[in-house]
Length: 102
Image 1 (cartoon, rainbow, N blue to C red):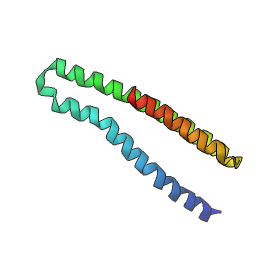
Image 2: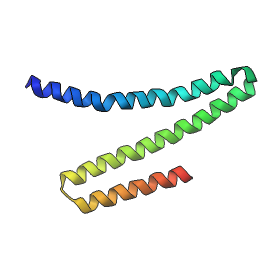
Image 3: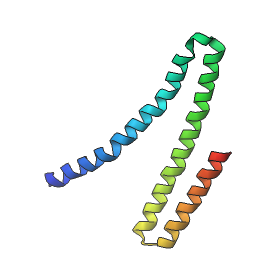
Image 4: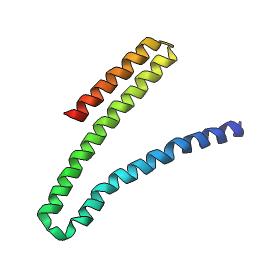
């Protein structure tokens, strides 16, 4: 039983480490922008902060769409309904692209 647990932990780390690194890099962009524009004045810093908030909201919405897509696709795979897997994938992809261009 411990062999299966170690294998699961290894797979979990293979997924979790890139996600953690992506989140750290994404959240550090706003901080780096503020540090770089710090000597330009408070209006510049406020502009960078506001832009960071919009980027954060966009990121949360896209992550929510991706999470829903993953859940829906996993359920359809479990039911072995390949037609619905494709439909769900393309529907969620369309929603993501509309959000990206909106």
